[in-house]
Length: 136
Image (tube, rainbow, N blue to C red):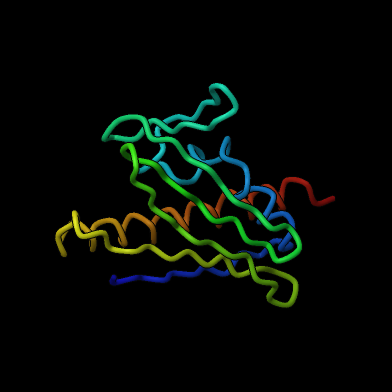
């Protein structure tokens, strides 16, 4: 399966980045093309996407700063989007891998990758603005 891995440098402490991306409620703030809204129902998180509602689970490991997203777009189907937060001096690298499922054409996949790149920029802007706002 083809994969595209993208990363972005964020001038924020790794724990701050991890705490933000590990919480499903923050998805509509930075993953705007995918997540129109998010809610919790019967202990499970759901996102409203342009294609309809999808169940999402974020498997986290705080010490390693892993926040892997698992999407269930249809019964019996699970899509994994691995993400990592890596320390980089006084900041962080946020790394995300997007796999190309058989159901996506090359053109559709490239559009998804472009959207991810835009969303990573949005994530950077949001987190760095939070850091500036909380600085004395």
